[in-house]
Length: 198
Image (cartoon, rainbow, N blue to C red; front, side):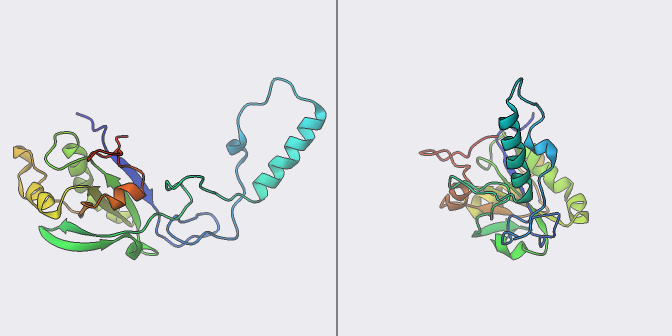
């Protein structure tokens, strides 16, 4: 059964180069020009030559400098990812996880799922764990987040997969009981305990 309730994001925490910008690092003053394909694939059916000249010069100016500006409080590609520090379960122990500690060290796949002990997403959650070695090869850490407590996370990883649990995972499950992480990433459904499904 495919999971339709996980929200995932690949967050880069490797220092930015000229060809790659990191959402967790400060925005770079030198930005790569936009590819022509970004500006649209179709041309208008008709246009005046004055409009075409104005549009052409506007496109050149746009390609020279491109800055992502968020108009809402939701994180967007190219913006700094909201930092957090929270308790998590890893290797059947309680640990602290701070997102900003990965800056300059690893990429991060941060995914959200609704609740522990549901049959919505365990196959996807365990699939991340089963392929953890592949993520390590590409310098990437996986973090799972839900609004459950660390005690619920611990009980779920201590339950065998055949019995509806996750079994041991190769990455931390982060507890967001205050819902602050989910809110800062825009995945919490207002007035409900559930997380936004993607």
